[in-house]
Image (tube, rainbow, N blue to C red):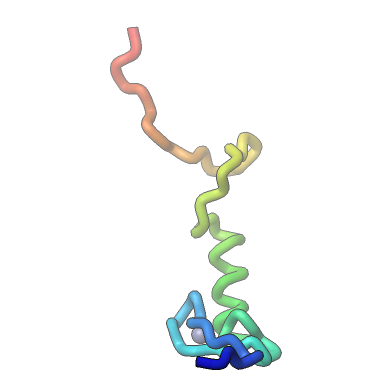
Length: 67
Ligand SMILES: [Zn+2]
């Protein structure tokens, strides 16, 4: 099968198919792009590096029975 230049992916937000030529790529719309930005702002994504100066402490495996 010949490969077309336009790659189709799925919008990470609503899973709608998006063409790589879409101005909002990789999102299907500006709305989904905004939602994605909001996710970042609210910490919806897990960041590999620990953020120590965050207002809300991220609780991950808090040792409750340390000596
Ligand atoms: Zn979408």
